Image (cartoon, rainbow, N blue to C red; front, side, top):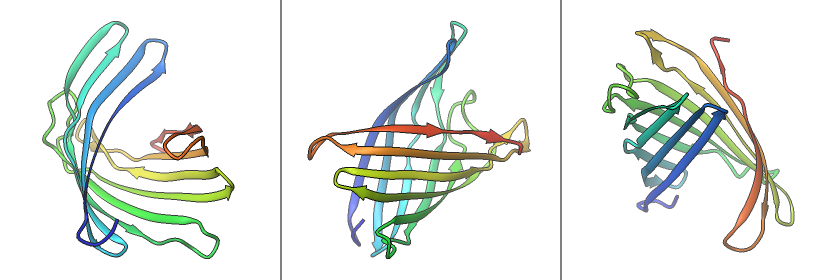
Length: 165
């Protein structure tokens, strides 16, 4: 992100975690502000959340996030590497909000594999407050991506989630 640049992002996530549980998050509005060459501030606004479990549906808003990103790459191997440090701000609805400011650290990377292929991933550590107790969640991701055209691509992604390890 160039210095003094502002970027607004938005999106939607639909997740099916098993045959009876689905989650929809919409909005996913994030404001990014480039401060220096490899440093940016980040603010993510609350999302609309709809969670369906065994036919029962709950809707509400998620917490906001505030933090920063520092880019460490490109490294000599052409690998892009960064560190994102954020904290949730407990402003969401009771069903989806934390009662505390919850820190998180993410280390994303991207490495070109040649032509239109790349290997991407992220190691994330979340420290959410669950039932007034600080938990630890590690979430690794790994994906292989291919550019299909200048404006489209496809990927195969693995996401793991491990808590209380």
